[in-house]
Length: 360
Image 1 (cartoon, rainbow, N blue to C red):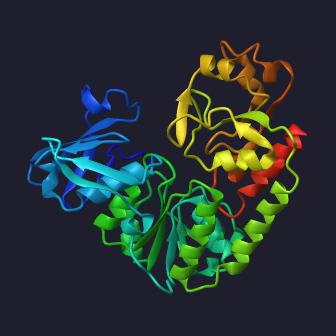
Image 2 (image 1 turned 90 degrees about the vertical axis):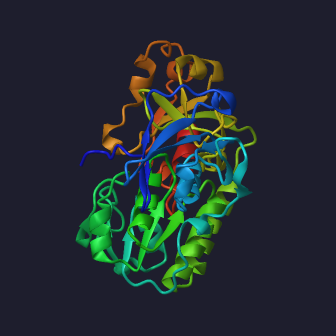
């Protein structure tokens, strides 16, 4: 399935990137900033210029009452939960923090469930309610019962029209990475009830278990207590000096977790510290010079969507500029299955155990 080109959609417009835009003012220093063209059904086109700390929209854009919701989704997917929306004259429109629950609906005792991220399928399974799941996105592989579920396409581009036809009582959507905002806004535009997750920490995952448990009408305490006990056991045996760790999400270009990613806690529980933990954002792009300057003790390649059997740790040292990286010279570059490290759900602490085993 081809990845959708639009950034989001509402009941009134579709947002597409303005590739010719030159950003200045409050957006000039924001590497994540984008200008979007908002294409309305009546042929009118508005604009929204979005940065992590400031968002500016024109009068046409403000005609859509769902605009602020869409901007909030865009922000959450990039690790931010505070609106700073202003009009074209820089007058405030919506300037406030917001909660994830504002992006979805309040549901109780949902019986027909669709999961739209592998971690969400695993959360429902941990709550003992996977028998309610009727469909899921393509990459879910746990629990075994996913084999009976209808597949809806990739997590960044599921078939939203098919989801609407299935009439779930609850869709579990996610905003853990940029691009997922088109799913959340698209479900809202089709009137599909959803609960939105976007965990950035272990506490957020435990909170998701609580929120999803409430929506399903099941007691989440056993699942929560189990994860908490795992984390406590890891904390009780931390090494005296943490190793400096580089965790790689993608090789070309190189992406790694930043300060707003749950991976920082996984690395800490393994007995390490993320060498890029001070970089803004949840997932940040770096280059070979950045990695040489960081000089990690140990590196893990954990490429998103790539099976463990296809991971190639040796490739890191073959890239220009990384041949003499200390971790490469010392043979301390390891593969880490992204099913553990890349899914903020009930199995994520396995990543900490595997990293610790490699570093010991």
